[in-house]
Image (cartoon, rainbow, N blue to C red; front, side, top):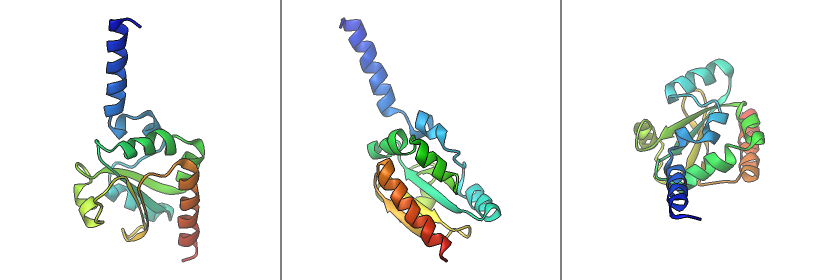
Length: 144
């Protein structure tokens, strides 16, 4: 590989590695709400739980959630049973991250329509494990 091609490949790889979750192709496969308030309102109307994905721009495991877990078609299908919202804990979701005591990333919090946390998944999970945890959360919520 020539020097120019190597430099170009390095630039492309670096830009992909530093891409924020909002610009990730996987992130577009899920219909994310833009704010917690909008998600809670929609959850109340649709009688669903809210799933809050807390991330940061520098979090590699957060990017892996986007690229692997949220990109999975089975995960995307199951997320239609919830109202998903993504919040940057160092940006638009700073206050919410403090409220829910999020201090590591990623964290997924499940809230009822009143904003009360009913479940939480700390850290990265690949799609099969995420689907298993999500199934447990939905089963528990349905039993209440």
